[in-house]
Length: 80
Image (tube, rainbow, N blue to C red; front, side, top):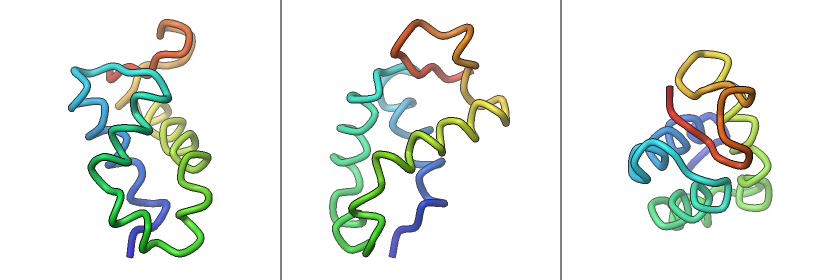
């Protein structure tokens, strides 16, 4: 069963699939496309995954995997 800890990898992989950058909506759609079955079977995560993926992105920024908000275009998530 998927957990919120999986979301960091999923966000990173979604951004790779999107060419290294994408809007929140594009990233969410890519995660849904790749992991719909996992999300549907994830219990409570099914109801919170879009919120939790934002926290996953924040952790990716702090670890240097994603660019900081200050250096990214408004509304766009970018891999470092």
